[in-house]
Length: 285
Image (tube, rainbow, N blue to C red; front, top):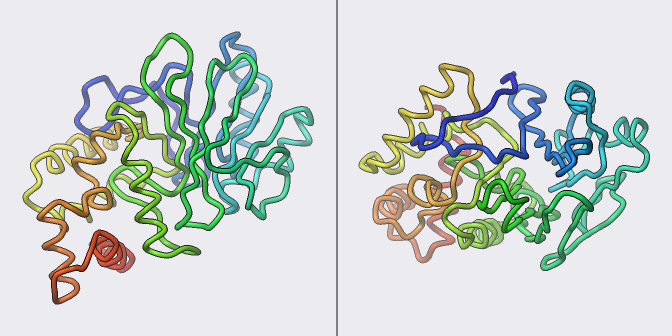
C-alpha cells in the first residue's frame, strides 16, 4: 500500500502537482480513495470509498467530518465502504450514477447533471462513460476553489494514468467513445483515477509505441516516483494524450501496432482501440 504524502513535484514528466484540496487515501493493494476538503477545513467529501477503514482513519487524523461521497461505478472496491461510512456519518449524502445497482446511493445523476456540495467551491459535471461497467460516470469540475485554477476529473476505472480500464460490461465502441469524451477536456485537467497502475500501464504502452520520446521520459519519471513510493496520480490530460495509447488511436505508431495485431489495417478508431485493449488484456511483460 502506498502511504499518503504531498505528491509529485510540479513539473515532473510523470505526474502533475496535486490539487491542494485533494489528498489520496490508499486502500487495498493499489486503490486510491480521493478525499476533498471543504473551504472551512472541517468537512470532507470522498470519491469511491471501497474500504471504510482508511477513510475513517484519515477523517479522524485530519479532524474532518464526512459531508458527501461521490461514486463512479458499482464495483465493490469502489462502494464496499458505504455501509460503514453511513453508520458513522448518517447525514453524509452519497451521489452516484442513475443506472447503478450499487446500494446506498442517495442521489442519482445522469450525463449533463451538475453535483454541488455546500462549502466545497466546486460544481461537478456528470459525464457518462460506459464501457468498464455500464453504470460508470466521471465527475469533472472546471475549478475547485481559488487556490488552484486547474480543472479536476475523477474518472474511476475508465481512464488510468497511462492506460484504461478493462471492458467488462460494455463494448469496445462504448469504451472508445467514453475515452474520447474525457480526452476532449482541457489540457491542464488533473486526472484523478482510482488505481496505482501506472508502471505496468507504461510498460505496455512502450510495447505499443516504442518510438514515443514523451512516453520514454514519462516511464523514467514514473520509476523515480515509485522508487520513493510516491503516487503517479494525478496526471495531466495533456500528458495522457501524448503518452496513453488508449487516447492515441490516430497516432501512426498506435495504428501500426493495431494493424500488426489484426493482420490488416484497422477500419476505424474503435477497431484500433479494441485491438490494443485485447492485447493489453493478455500482456504479461
